[in-house]
Length: 94
Image (tube, rainbow, N blue to C red; front, side, top):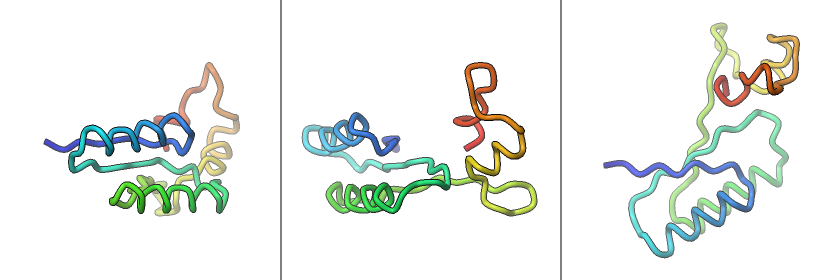
């Protein structure tokens, strides 16, 4: 059985991952879904967290049909709208 822990980069998911590694030691796969607009500090946080957890954080990304990387900016342009309570495509698409 594979155990996957999804990380946002925020304090709650970071604390959960660290606590799981501490009290429920298993072969976890840590994943995140970057938007393409992460700051260098966020990328560094994910790198350092992966080191502390002993397993790199896998960044799950998607490509558009033309092969270009799907980012939040490219999806905003495609839908001509920001994600909102009526258009909840952001999480599903990224």
